Image (cartoon, rainbow, N blue to C red; front, top):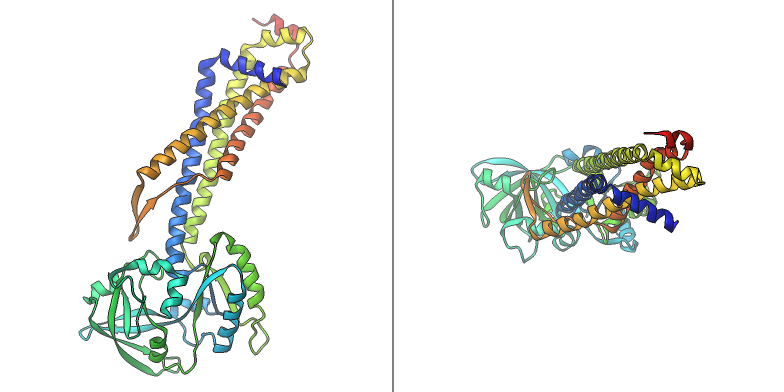
Length: 414
């Protein structure tokens, strides 16, 4: 085996220009794939973190059927206190859950005493919300960023609404809401902070204390519309979802049917489609890498067989076994793929280091995205293995052709 590899390496070095060009093509393919995967991964992490850490949480629990009409913020589809208590027990017992926040969601009329507008409100417990969606506080562009997230009697107003209604921190506003029975109630609040916009649903939501929300809706029980859940590690999302689904299935309604439903952030946010699109693009980039390596190596090996017909005939004439000839050409292809892939990996790491020293910043909707690409060892090894594997496959046909060559005809070849 060692002698075969030495012979294959010597043959590659005999045609240095062709070997170098082929290795460069493979290297460029590997670099293109790894850099795309690193940049796309950074973008995905930033977007998912923005959505989950400042708005949705990783998982959400609702009453069965609530999400079907979530856009209308139905008040008749709330979780009752008994069900809420059972949900809390389940979440506290699950080892993957880091924190959770109970929310009362409602639509209201927002008035600055001069003009009116609509607002979506989240009634929250400040401490619980801070733990479940820690990046929400970072969206406060004006107001106290270090104190309680939202104090009783105060409201966090989305930037778009604050700008349109010309309100600022410290102004008094009135919130008017209609409860589930059709009764109208109003309450005066003080603007406690302005929230920066975020791309997608939830970017226009305001926040008030959960007790104020229940008072506004004249709730006499501690009902909630949703429970936002934060996991210790988002990578355990699918496993935690299955386990929690099984546990939540024990909470039943009067018809002995499941009373709750559990959804991941991806099921609640349209940005999950962007994540899927990035994964699809990564798949097509992989296909491009396969095509580049396959065509490059096969072309080189076919040329090598054609140019070395008399050499192949001589080797066969002195008793070299066909499998030995095949192994030589197969080894040449594998070495080409390995050399090009290793060079590509090394260059990719260098570019990633440079991109972290001088990060790329661009606008995405209303947000500024800063890319901090990283290369995961598993991904690097998979790309390296893919390049070498495809190089070997591309060498099979030329190697088989060399092994099947008639020695007499090969020696007569001019």
